[in-house]
Length: 379
Ligand SMILES: Nc1nc2c(ncn2[C@@H]2O[C@H](COP(=O)(O)OP(=O)(O)OP(=O)(O)O)[C@@H](O)[C@H]2O)c(=O)[nH]1
Ligand SMILES: [Mg+2]
Picture 1 (spheres, rainbow, N blue to C red):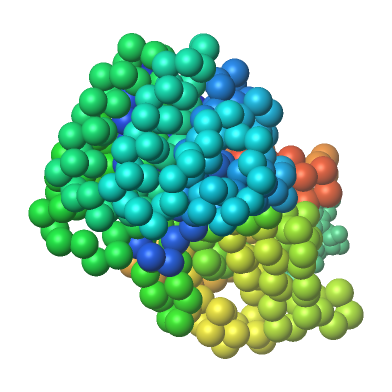
Picture 2: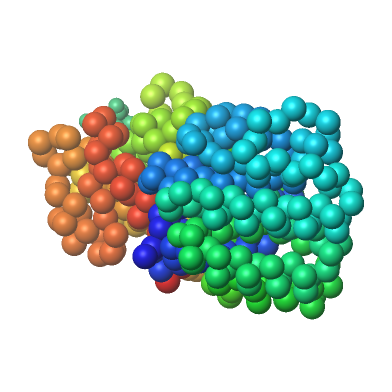
């Protein structure tokens, strides 16, 4: 059975979700907040009825609950295996509390492993477990850790448990990483790349494409740094940027854009910055500047003005580099004279046309999602 985990693109990569009762390793670079990533998944599982179990070696249960609360994630009924409070001399009412200093790796590992086994066997129902994190115990050796994970894999099957293990690669030997990767069912890589002085986090499995993400106050969202929105004069670009965005600014004079629109979008697992161009020809020189480093294009046309479609295609040519995904918004569908999207599609001769209205917000979210899907083809 496939389990939903609240991160759609990752579910697609896993052919519909994480396999129930499987063991997954989140193997991450040093600059990724792997704990938040896994807590987002955990929240989705708790909402779906699983019991969440969280083994922690670095943050106290209170800190974890606060992080989850701040993001609006569900943490109801979570069971903690607390391997840190004792070391920090903090009070803890965790159900499973390690009474061994984390600094004594061998003893701590033994104790943590016992508590982990206890938590899995004694907690009733379907369980989703986050083991945060393995690197605390790397001192006992990768072979020992891999051996235990294999043992727990069997235990997980017998106790209806799905396990997520977190491991940051602090430059361990390749053979050590290989051993641990070999002990789980799936390895999800969380990484970071630098693009134009912007550090971006991604996840991927094997040699599948990298999906960029951002952990925002509302959770893990698939991240596109720059989408361009262009189209003829008065097609509705600025209105669409406003309608789609959490925050938006337009640099307009007398009701027309003279420089650009900027909006920040954060919705339904999607995060992006969107840049709108002016529509008037006298500003076409700005188009080329705004079109730098874009990941996708939304071409907006006014569906009541088929006379402007030629200009729309010219503008698309102007900004479209080779292979950049684009879609067309056949805007102003709320107006009675608007051509239907199928008609607009025929006239323009392009594939993806969505009927939209900046007034009623019809089609805007679907259109954006379609563009995201084109940008991140994972299948
Ligand atoms: N009925 C209707 N009116 C719209 C819609 N979208 C935009 N408008 C109106 O169309 C006019 C132009 O909208 P803008 O959003 O400024 O268009 P623009 O493409 O940014 O225009 P320029 O920057 O001048 O090229 C405004 O009066 C909007 O209120 C829509 O979906 N339906
Ligand atoms: Mg405008």
